Image (cartoon, rainbow, N blue to C red; front, side, top):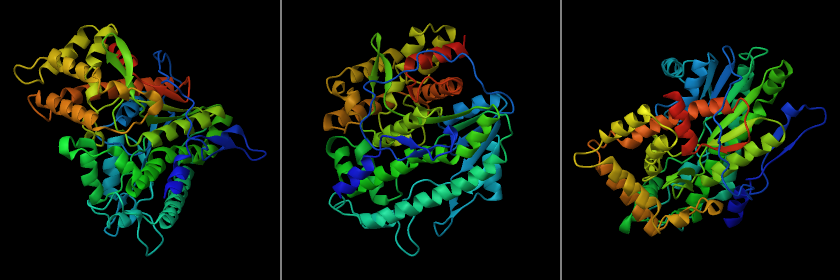
Length: 476
């Protein structure tokens, strides 16, 4: 089992190859070769973008579905404001027999209204957890035999899983080729194109994992469970492989599959850009300095680093693909990670530090209004500062070791602090971190949209300093 896992993990580096006679834009991105990250420290975006190449009539392609809470909303808003023609895709839906199907007419109409554009209705469900040879079990089916008592020792049939993975990849790339053929007819000559990759996730829908995840990400005291125990199990290894397929490899497939569109657009004088959402910790204001910190344990971390390497490989061949490592926010998918929202709260201090005026003060007042009687905003900020500067959390600021496994002390402190902060509010459904999440989304949209016009690198961190400066610029 270990050998198979190492093979999967080893695909973090990257290289391009080109057949004779092909243009740079037609080069194919092949599987990365090394898991050694070149970056020793985060590479922050320091300058606010000053201009954009995108204008009315250009094409914005959302490579993923748009949900109510999530980063993609900020980028889509920028495309709308620029007057771009917005095109989306769908992951499809599953019927009663778990077969993938396109959206129904009613589902398609609702999705297109939400997006504000046209959706190419060909299912692009990433991952392989629900794929298998005809009549044989899917990887998710295999997980049904795992129990809470035996899952750490239970073994999976890796030869069968490899067949399922191959089928899943072939299904996805075949459907993607159809999507790109349709898209090609929708991109006018001479127009710029912005591909925004938003696919992420990959957790199989297995009851046993839901119970395990609840302990790994929300368990403290006697309910604590080591994240390393999960990753060392066959269950964990399967999840990591599926994370790679969904969160990272889909970006590689997108770059490859759009090569002919890219070549045509560039030949007519247009430009093509690719963006993707990453997470690799964030610099937040701790005391007087911006300091890198991270949520622990971020199980998807290896896939996010693979995503970075795919962008680096594309960049090395002249393809402008950038992964933007964004701050922690609360979303539908991140709410399982108790404590991931804590780094959001010091953004209030960053708003003031980065020359915030009356609008920044208004955000402080809005946050005060959400707290229970007798609770001050200053006390909440101090609680988060004490958490970040504690002897327990300092060792987790090890960028080179990211993503580190959790520990009993770290889990107890992270989850406990998160619980205490949540209980400081009047209403558990109206939190300071909800308000601040919306602000971060508002800032990342123009930052990514503007920076992608003339990107400075394949991997950039959007830390709290640039987030605060962007927000203060938007609200003078």
